[in-house]
Length: 188
View 1 (cartoon, one colour):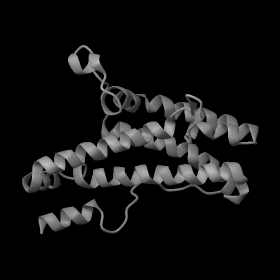
View 2: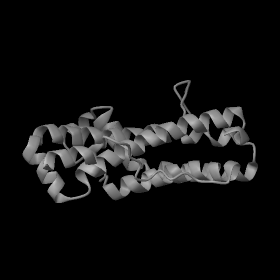
View 3: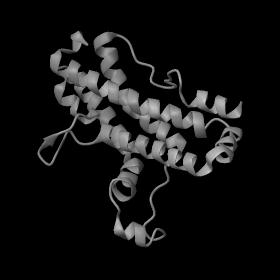
């Protein structure tokens, strides 16, 4: 991170930690609900209501994380640390333009997540609640979540590649004692 300079390096490091956190939550979600119907059946048979709450909480946490990572650099006079704050911190004009373009792509891909955050998760949009058919939310799928996270990590990897001549592997992040271990224990 030293090659980035203090301001960019510090912002990059903190954002990287937040991106890793979102990927970690996403990995837990996938291990519980995205790998096999047998696993979902086991969860439902063990404690269906509890695991429904866990599923919704993990899903919403990932959506909120994506939104926070793609929020404007400044809102209501307060600075946010999001990928959209990074271009202004980059001295190299070519890299700044590249990162700004990648940020726009990530913002475009995150629009479905933003709609869910604004109407369902962070706020209770009255029109949506009263008439969900007339005020539907766009569908968010596992595939779209993967694309959104991929667009966010593309921003970080462009910077990392330029300054450190490397990229970071964010997918399939895991640690001991994770959801896969829980599933294993429930099945045995």
